[in-house]
Image (tube, rainbow, N blue to C red):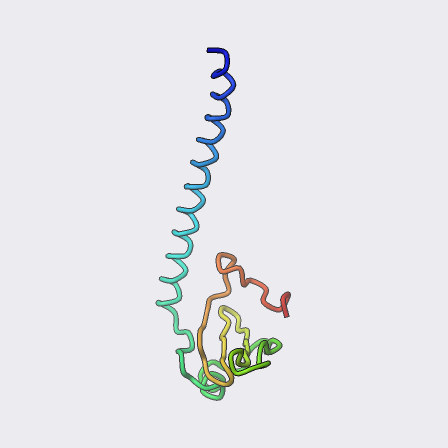
Length: 114
């Protein structure tokens, strides 16, 4: 009987920890869902547009971040342009993705990883 009294606090701690993890996962999913909905409702550069088309339609970016990759055919050059509310990712010279500048996306300050 005395052996089990030490397991009760441990069981309570595990239960609380699990509840917190589930709550955090639900919040992260809600945040991601909201971000995707926000991106769909915004006029972001579409996949396949050229750099010239993006610049013509959205203007000069605030910053053109350092290119990444390009060391082999399996790793093409990825360029990133930062605008006020979004970042555009180019593979070579065409858009592959546009994302909002949001803390949820962990890209609030892309220049810090430049």
